[in-house]
Image (cartoon, rainbow, N blue to C red; front, side, top):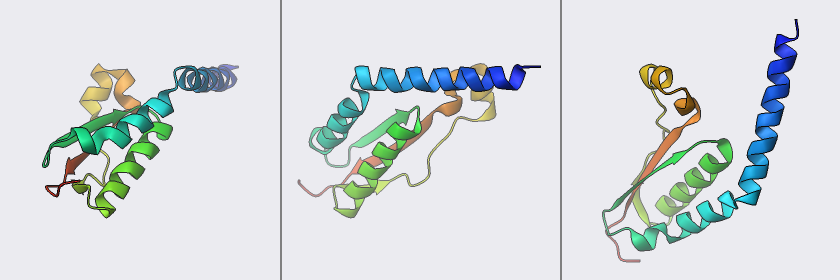
Length: 110
Protein backbone atom coordinates (compact mmCIF):
# COMPACT_ATOMS: atom_id res chain seq x y z
CA UNK A 1 0.00 0.00 0.00
CA UNK A 2 0.81 3.63 -0.29
CA UNK A 3 0.35 4.39 3.40
CA UNK A 4 3.98 5.25 4.09
CA UNK A 5 4.31 7.29 0.90
CA UNK A 6 1.11 9.17 1.75
CA UNK A 7 2.37 9.96 5.28
CA UNK A 8 5.63 11.26 3.81
CA UNK A 9 3.75 13.44 1.31
CA UNK A 10 1.50 14.77 4.09
CA UNK A 11 4.51 15.65 6.26
CA UNK A 12 6.23 17.43 3.36
CA UNK A 13 3.08 19.45 2.69
CA UNK A 14 2.66 20.25 6.40
CA UNK A 15 6.29 21.39 6.77
CA UNK A 16 6.05 23.51 3.62
CA UNK A 17 2.87 25.17 4.85
CA UNK A 18 4.48 25.75 8.26
CA UNK A 19 7.51 27.42 6.62
CA UNK A 20 5.22 29.66 4.57
CA UNK A 21 3.16 30.60 7.64
CA UNK A 22 6.32 31.42 9.63
CA UNK A 23 7.59 33.68 6.85
CA UNK A 24 4.29 35.39 6.02
CA UNK A 25 3.49 36.08 9.68
CA UNK A 26 7.08 37.11 10.44
CA UNK A 27 6.98 34.75 13.42
CA UNK A 28 10.75 34.58 13.91
CA UNK A 29 11.10 38.36 13.75
CA UNK A 30 8.31 38.74 16.32
CA UNK A 31 9.87 36.12 18.61
CA UNK A 32 13.32 37.74 18.30
CA UNK A 33 11.81 41.13 19.22
CA UNK A 34 10.09 39.61 22.26
CA UNK A 35 13.29 37.89 23.41
CA UNK A 36 15.27 41.13 23.00
CA UNK A 37 12.76 43.15 25.05
CA UNK A 38 12.13 40.49 27.69
CA UNK A 39 14.84 41.61 30.16
CA UNK A 40 13.52 45.17 30.17
CA UNK A 41 9.90 44.17 30.84
CA UNK A 42 10.70 41.62 33.56
CA UNK A 43 11.10 42.98 37.08
CA UNK A 44 14.23 41.85 38.93
CA UNK A 45 13.48 38.28 40.03
CA UNK A 46 10.64 38.11 37.49
CA UNK A 47 10.02 34.86 35.67
CA UNK A 48 9.31 34.21 32.01
CA UNK A 49 7.90 30.97 30.63
CA UNK A 50 7.66 30.36 26.91
CA UNK A 51 6.10 27.52 24.97
CA UNK A 52 7.67 26.64 21.64
CA UNK A 53 6.10 24.48 18.98
CA UNK A 54 8.94 23.74 16.58
CA UNK A 55 12.72 23.58 16.55
CA UNK A 56 13.25 27.00 14.97
CA UNK A 57 11.43 28.71 17.83
CA UNK A 58 12.98 26.50 20.49
CA UNK A 59 16.51 27.13 19.23
CA UNK A 60 15.99 30.91 19.43
CA UNK A 61 14.53 30.80 22.94
CA UNK A 62 17.24 28.46 24.23
CA UNK A 63 20.02 30.59 22.74
CA UNK A 64 18.53 33.79 24.18
CA UNK A 65 18.12 32.36 27.69
CA UNK A 66 21.59 30.81 27.64
CA UNK A 67 23.23 34.04 26.45
CA UNK A 68 21.26 36.06 28.99
CA UNK A 69 22.46 33.76 31.76
CA UNK A 70 26.09 34.01 30.65
CA UNK A 71 25.89 37.82 30.57
CA UNK A 72 24.13 38.10 33.94
CA UNK A 73 20.73 39.19 32.64
CA UNK A 74 19.13 35.97 33.93
CA UNK A 75 20.08 34.46 37.27
CA UNK A 76 18.87 31.01 36.28
CA UNK A 77 17.31 29.31 33.28
CA UNK A 78 15.88 25.88 32.61
CA UNK A 79 18.63 24.03 30.77
CA UNK A 80 16.37 21.04 30.34
CA UNK A 81 13.27 21.45 28.28
CA UNK A 82 9.94 20.39 29.80
CA UNK A 83 7.78 18.24 27.52
CA UNK A 84 4.15 17.20 27.94
CA UNK A 85 3.57 13.86 29.66
CA UNK A 86 1.78 10.88 28.19
CA UNK A 87 -1.61 11.84 29.62
CA UNK A 88 -1.33 15.37 28.20
CA UNK A 89 -0.34 14.04 24.77
CA UNK A 90 -3.28 11.62 24.77
CA UNK A 91 -5.84 14.23 25.83
CA UNK A 92 -4.29 16.97 23.67
CA UNK A 93 -2.48 15.48 20.63
CA UNK A 94 -1.38 18.92 19.42
CA UNK A 95 0.80 19.23 22.52
CA UNK A 96 3.18 16.48 21.36
CA UNK A 97 5.59 18.96 19.73
CA UNK A 98 5.40 21.55 22.53
CA UNK A 99 8.41 22.47 24.67
CA UNK A 100 8.42 24.68 27.75
CA UNK A 101 11.44 26.86 28.58
CA UNK A 102 11.84 29.32 31.46
CA UNK A 103 14.20 31.89 32.94
CA UNK A 104 14.43 34.22 35.94
CA UNK A 105 15.60 37.82 35.58
CA UNK A 106 18.60 38.59 37.77
CA UNK A 107 18.32 41.02 40.67
CA UNK A 108 21.14 43.14 39.18
CA UNK A 109 19.89 46.34 37.46
CA UNK A 110 20.33 46.34 33.68
